Length: 451
Image (tube, rainbow, N blue to C red; front, side, top):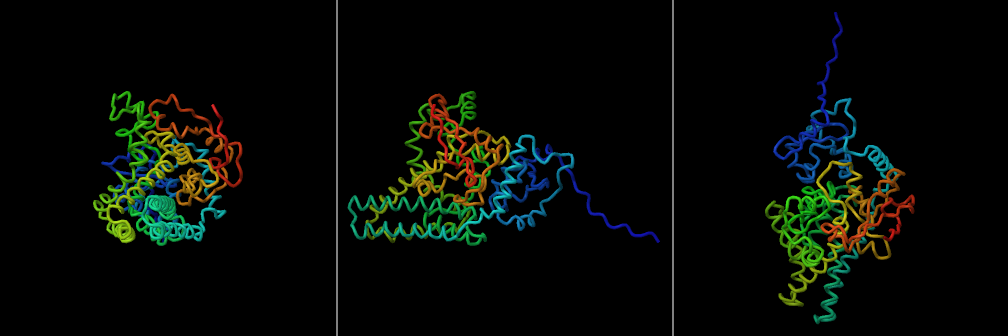
């Protein structure tokens, strides 16, 4: 009797990069590739915990590096991905798309493995709890200033400065909780994120996740990064997009004066005139009732704390003074390290190049870390979003340094004018000769050459 032939599993389906790239639109199938495996995410996007848009931005592309960067428990996530698996790349297909830098990507993945092996992605929760404690102490000091010194102009001004510092520092702290990068379990990260951004700042965690994850996924990519949505209705951003507007003869604002009116509608107005009201529309329209409850707890707390001291009108004046001061702080620290940099449509370049070209960290210095939320490590934070801003991975090898050296450092004060005039702003190359084994090249001390 002939021996039984062992049962054969289903033959895997093979695809090419061109076939994957065709499944990228909003009205048709959406596929993406992770470690050469092809996944159909067409029906999954709305169920994606990180939001539908952030995963859709990689439809038709290789999402291996952002997948690794965004997920702290990759093994668990892969179990849920099995139902989305439809095949893999054909054996003759390269592992990298032709638009991506193969050498740089390989070196970055080696660096990423080294970083995790050295334990540099493990945060010290005590540091962040002490950070939270100092925010709570500043919050108490603001109220004590009015209670002990009265409500005249100087105590009121000092109270406003202290509360603005509380809001700014809470903004930096919630960033790390929001990326699930402080505790080893997502539950505690989510809880502290809700507390800091909801109860201490009065903003919804889901709104921040919705916007900020997209920014990390495709920084400075027009129509994918919400941080640059002010183009073209308020500002003309980036050389490429500005030239495109000129060719199309479209002009929504007097762009030749945007470096002047930016100071009127940018830093002073973003929080008090836009974010302050839009966040309520966001949570109600999306039915984020848990976030709304956390937000209400913030407004109830500050109302009961300051109305007895200042009255309703005095309270409203203090509140919007704080939002005004915080808005200037927030915009200059968070937005001005992206707006001066390269802005374009999504060209599907590799993960590292996308992050390097999109962010200009402020120089490190005495007091700069607390003042900027450690954004001197912003490039590291973009490349490693699941790590905290205080992490400092080891350096890239020589080819990565050469890539980093190609990034220009625009004048921060002339950055807005750069988008349209592109004549008066002086660009000076980043000096990356001083590179230590402790900091990434973009975080190392450097002295820009003076033109």
